[in-house]
Length: 282
Image (cartoon, rainbow, N blue to C red; front, side, top):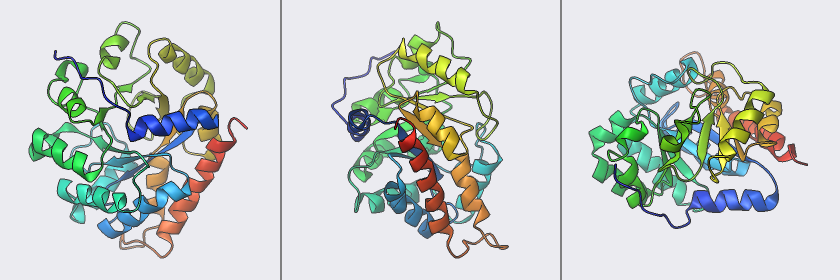
């Protein structure tokens, strides 16, 4: 396996350093690119930082999202039905960067759309558009030469998932080329499935800190400001995805079109999450 180059400080690094200086955990939000349509997706994306998102994960729609639960699967289908594709996802990023050059943006999803686009072309276009990191859920460390190492060489962080079943023997391989932050999946299974106990999260965060100095973000099963606050007390950030996506779905009309107030309602929910996170260490 090829070793990864040492990266210079990125937007992700700067944001987590700022959070540490402020003495608080961060809020990482997930939305699917193009959900429910391109224009609404862009409005949501542009509004997330002002609503309190410290880092934004932008899902790459894919036809076979095997690790995602019903909410995010439905979001991907809505996006694809309304013309989402990789070129349009990168268009969203470019439009976002016209007004915001500070908030870290991470693309999350599966390898197939990247492979189809072409790895070299994808990394060049994503970097120019303003992407800071990648989370690719179906590429294990054994395949780091496929995308992880080229991404790091291109200046794009490669963020790895760890789970309750990632034991101490496996962690060094998982963390070897990880950069930006480590995403701890607090429950086994698909997105949106159940919630881990606070005690289990506390124990997992403590164990991971023995293996890495990277910031730790905890996600899966965080649905309320109170749950986000509990995570932010021990981790460097709480990740909320399915709960936000369900808010989008709840603000669609009978025809699946955005109802009046969708963007404001979703961003109000994000504000409540952000207030919870910000109060966690107060």
